[in-house]
Amino acid sequence: TQTKKIKKRPSFFKWPFIRGIANLIDMLVIGIKTLTWSANQISDEEDEQLSSTQITFTLILSIGFAILLFVALPYFLSVITGVKEESSPILFNLIDGIIKMAILLIYMYSISLIKDIRRVFEYHGAEHKTVHCYEAGKTLTVKNIKKYSTKHPRCGTSFIFIVFLISMFAFALIPTMLESLFPSFLSLPFWPRKGLLFMIRVPFILPIASIAYEALKLSGKYTKNSIVRLISYPGILLQYITTKEPDKKQIEVAIKSMELVMTREK
Image 1: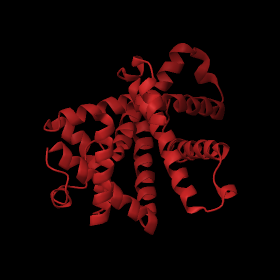
Image 2: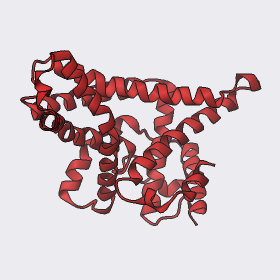
Image 3: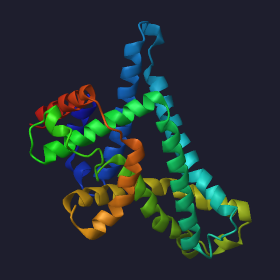
Image 4: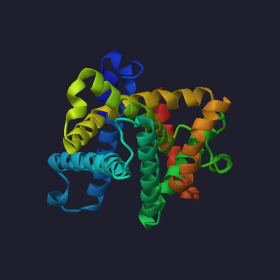
């Protein structure tokens, strides 16, 4: 039903810098619905299945947790380093970005140790191998797919890294922007000033994500460009955590999924 809604949308949802935000929201909704459907298959009792209210609450809670862990915590830790955001915005946001990456690495590595999550990462690897095989124009068979890498430059993991990279530069503009619009901004007490600077970061996430989406699409077109490869490389390294070698059955699931996608595209 969600894919039907996407097809019925006005054409401007496919415009550059708008399509990234629309696709991000779609993936969040589809992801939560898919996980909910999967959880409900396990439950035999109808009254144990998740309701739409519970799904919405889960989505809000997930977004809130992500903002707390990857926006609020790095910002607070950057503040206590003593570097002043207002006078040294680039250095402050460089520290903020490094802390974000450290938290991301610790988080990803920690969940990769969970047996069920490791299996999810194996399916992730099967997906990437299958996409590589399809893009190479080869027949989708287990034998052909096994030859390809579990790492893919247009992966969501690479997207996260690009978001962090762009945010370093985008967030550095906030103090200057506020000072130019509101000259009395610097006269505010320390914590109200920091609270305002942080709150402005949250709505910045969507335009940053839209820019990152376009950058990711470009990376798929210019895979041999040395600059593009350099920017994509850290995202590829992250995939050593988020993708694992799949078994035969997992590859067969990926093949079936790809065939269904190809059928719907046609």
